[in-house]
Length: 398
Image (cartoon, rainbow, N blue to C red):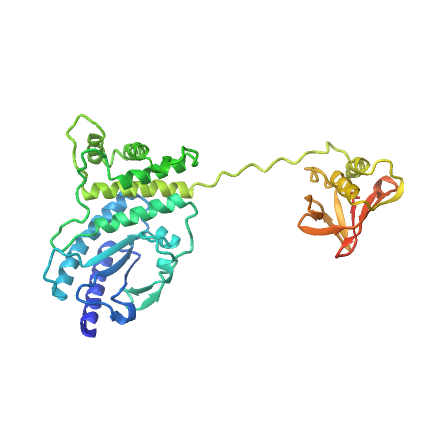
């Protein structure tokens, strides 16, 4: 295809983009794929036109579906205009593929096909500025942590793409759902089951996140919550779940609404603050002075010691240090355990011994021997020479 033809296609897309912006105020419209890769060198008579439309911030699924319904009208006209410009004889063939995403999906950098870093590392022609940009602004800044939420987001994004897959004749790629058995498309029910699984904190039976019966029930609840706005869809869905009325088909818009409701429910799970365990309450010394607490622990670790006594046996060292620095080391009303390294005095909050290595707080050391020094109450301490840094001392808070 000639450079002039490629330029004409881009100009047509920019004109279309301005019309959409004037009517729907999207956050951005971009072109990607073969039309802009290597200046369109691989774009030919049978190539598709790939567009990305970033929706404005629309937190409600019903309102998003209505917005997409209006975008569909613009997209159908674009199909007709592209077919004429490219002289495509088959008006039933789909020319343009539109990926419609929310700002959340851009921030999460989640593409319907699972392509990693799709929105952050691809080349995009900004139809507003006419400039080719690497990545969409904000892409990848807020990943989605929960895998199943991400699956629901990708599912809905793919459903939008199918919904917008209408050719110049108005033929829908997403056909009315008339299955004689299922209440809704299986993929929709499976992703609704994922939401239910997550809402139950993932403690359901293995495989429950893909159970279509569970998903069908969850869709019933989602629809009932919005029955005031979706009365007709509630009735049609109910007829497909064994109601007394004749079994009615689900239109493409009905199916889109179900997908957007699943999207909203999944996003609510992701946004739910993680249950934070209450920090365990520190014990109290009940008014005892820190020297008393330390003296009791010292007497347990070094019973009978008077003055200065050295311990060189490795087993005895481990046993005595484990007693001296056993939990609890922190109290709500006192900090009895400290260690000294050179001129620094540091509170001890953690102690463990593993494979002959001692860890105090975040410092590891190899202990050679221990001296227990028991003088007056406020002067009792334990001296621990070790490798490779200078000697340290454990003492009470004086």
